[in-house]
View (cartoon, rainbow, N blue to C red):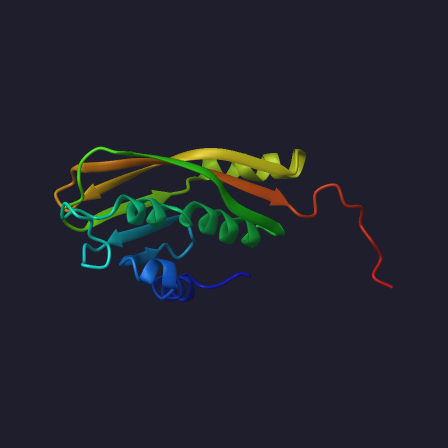
Length: 161
């Protein structure tokens, strides 16, 4: 479903798995080329040593590449199924305050996905993410592998009568 950036921002803000972990979408770019997210430290996501629970950090990174690719490709006329196929995370420094990340999809990334979807029908690729604190210190790195299936790849045109 194609939605506006503002609608998706508010839907994700109140999506229970994100909301209760204090994962807050700050902004979707008006063309869905980027997304900025804040993880607020609170009693709901604090672990025993006072930092943000690693599972919260991991969960925060889950949906956003898939959401951006889904919205971008639908606007290019594709009917797609998009999901996060796999992910890995490295914790580098405890998140003792709010954490932030921004992901971007550039022209080359989108063109590669479109080409593969038109020719092969399935696009799978891993992209990096960096999670930082307010001082800009790197606290975690994540690799998210996005899976995109062109639901119309290989179909023959049909007359609708």
